[in-house]
Amino acid sequence: MSFTTPGLVCGHHHLYSSLARGMPSPPAVPRSFIGVLENVWWRLDAALDLDIIYWSAALGAAEALLSGTTAIIDHHESPSSIEGSLDAIARGCDLVGVRHILSYGVTDRWNNGSMLSSVSPTTPITDGARRGLLENERYLKSGRRAMVGVHAAFTCGNETLEAAADLSKKYNTGVHIHVAEGVDDIDAGERLKNLATDDWLLVHAVHLSGELAGTIAHNPRSNMNNSVGYAAPSQRQNRIVLGTDGIGADMMEEFRLAYARHREFDLTASPDTAWSWLENGHHFFPEAKQDVVQWSYDHSDSPWHVAFTPGIRAVDVAINGVPQVSNGVPLNFDLNEIRAKAAEAAQRLHERL
Ligand SMILES: [Zn+2]
Image (cartoon, rainbow, N blue to C red):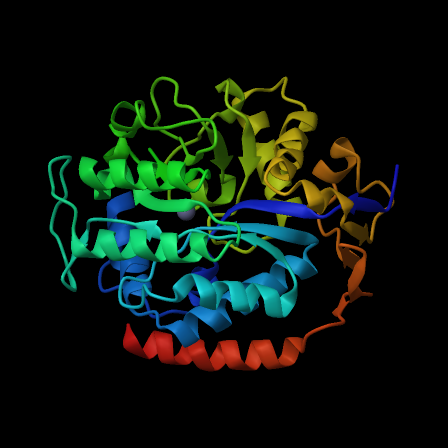
């Protein structure tokens, strides 16, 4: 029993969503998962510019660090500001000091600045997808840690999916892709089965039929928020990690939700299973095991205790031996400045919507 744990890992984040809170209501109340994408997220991501992306990343990274999360796997889309977007996120994370693996989510739903009404497997690769692939490659070439991002099979033609898989092989990294989050992407498993490899990161897999190679990122709160169903990750052979899908990066909280949903599905479930999903994040960031988080609770390393103890706070955080948070206060950046600049950026973003 201990006050400390290693640094926690968010296995799937969208740092660009940090400024979505308080955004204007959508023109129509979404009544389906696609409606949520069209009316909320695809309007938001199209309104992003590099300055907004930077402050959004800085705020999201700061909130992660203050929650004891020292490493983030991010998935980004900004169709109006593709080039340089990954650098902007990296700078925001570096300001705060959290570790990161970034990816730009390629999609064929944008072509020459306008959204296509539908994308099919035979849709030829669009200029938007080409620019997204180039952004992934540009960033990978710089030597920083990254994966090749793909939005999802249902918004990409086969040509684009194959190009993303080829690019990931060239740089010896995996593809980071949403898979069968909603029923609209139910064909994903079939379309990806000859492309996916063990180093892929498959996000959600709620409606995935059959097996697919890769790690599955389970996002319990997001799945509930989008009403897409339960992913039942305990039924999969794949390695499972936990993510937030952009709703903060409080991984202790996400662990509690993962356990509660597992228990709802199976009364015999133990919190040890969801805890193992949390720990599996260190597969992507082995060095985060050396990060030290001191919590406000003396059984912070006990799944059974933590599962039933809401409100545990990260008190001190050290990354790579360097103290970053002391008594809940960041030591190496100005949180008030980040909050103020992020609020200004949020106002500009919301005015565009
Ligand atoms: Zn996502």
